[in-house]
Image 1: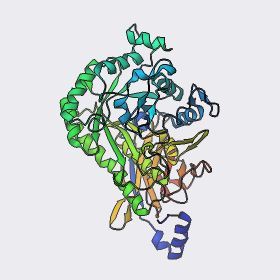
Image 2 (image 1 turned 180 degrees about the horizontal axis):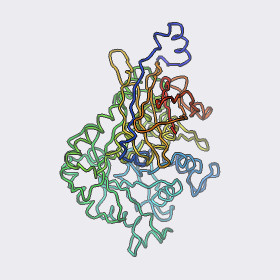
Image 3 (image 1 turned 90 degrees about the horizontal axis):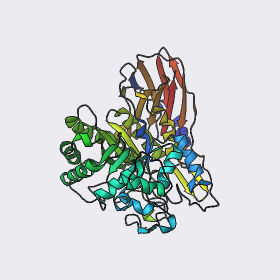
Image 4 (image 1 turned 90 degrees about the vertical axis):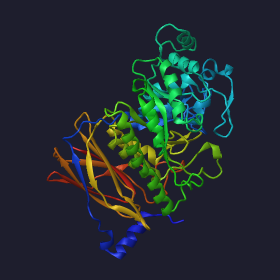
Length: 514
């Protein structure tokens, strides 16, 4: 396994000569006069499933815990970190877990709550000590909108609609009375609702025509807040027929969003290690991540046919890197480390979502803590922020900003006989009239010279931040939790309306222009 180290690369390139390092300039045009699309903050959502140590030991340590500072069992350090991230929405309780979860088991006195078996994730016993009140109160602490995934696979319409009333109805009813009995007088007014999860797989192994009818039934009886946002269980990757059927067969008056799931997986039978990976594996990961562009574009095209006014959102509510679990950990807990490779996946994926913000209006990284491409890892009282956390924090300047359309001519990242676009970019202007540009160079060896030409605006100054490290495999650990963190980037020039800079290998840069 060859570890890519920047210091070694730099020395070798100096010896070989400047001709090797010389790069054709990547030309990027930004149109600041054609800005009509808002980048919804909800593109920067997260996902919390009852899986491994995401909830228990991640978000929640229990009310009797004396080692970890908490508020009613919710970790204070996690809350503060996610507030810094400006998490707009949090999806819960699954995932596959959602379609076996019965919400009434998670309310009332904790000592009286029934236990269940988590059949999807290692068959561990779920004691339901973290339930609806815990989650919704936690969302209030974080400042995030709750996104509830309802049980369609093993539940009933009555169970689902009771949950809607329990959390959102402000009048007198059996469910609102039960909520008050359990300590919450006023409703949370939950807006975001998923009608099942992965109905094509763990949510019931349904065909799209059958699920479309099931969705119509459930959505008809969902009566909550006036601005309720109902999301259909959407396609797995490139199942374009699934999207076609849902857009064709479900009345758009009861359909607000159609989901899409895609993970940057190189091979589902052999996903590869999270840290000890070669450049070949890295290249395949980038190829899998960049496929999001094709998926979003093609699903959007189908949606455009039935919804040319783009009223129905494309909701990518599961995305991220997925590798083999860390050696010695429970295979069903999906615990993996988070390296600079994950920073690349996060940066280029968010750029894709931003650039398709006319249709992509909600997305959820999988998952928030200790599972898959996490932004936070915990070990009892210890907590660290991953490279993915830092990318999402650098990018949150785009939340609810206005998209600036771009045209890019980029160099290629070449590996053996294949090539990928080396540079990824998105840009926006916020309410304070500040322009932000986020750039990614996925090439692990070559820097990329960038020329930014803005049409409609002239800037005088530029400041920036960069996330990079010495090797692709670098990651933060509990012994060295700040090995990778953003640093000031000042190697950017503004002259005669043109912005120029050089992006080092496998780096993410965020610029602010005035």
